[in-house]
Length: 82
Image (cartoon, rainbow, N blue to C red; front, top):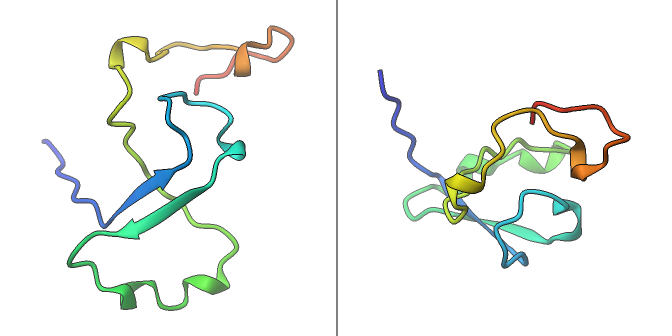
């Protein structure tokens, strides 16, 4: 059964290329979608982290790695299934 997902916000960042690594060097912001009540975020400041599911809609799917790989291409690191 298909699952439909409706975004409640959008992420923007300083990154201009569709690369899936080194996000620690970027600054990102989240803008609530129109119709999403800001009151839904009340109390969020007391948490140290939040989980943000995302969809890389500008990345060419043909370049996606679907098998195990060494993190950041470093052969000294064990294979990861990410």
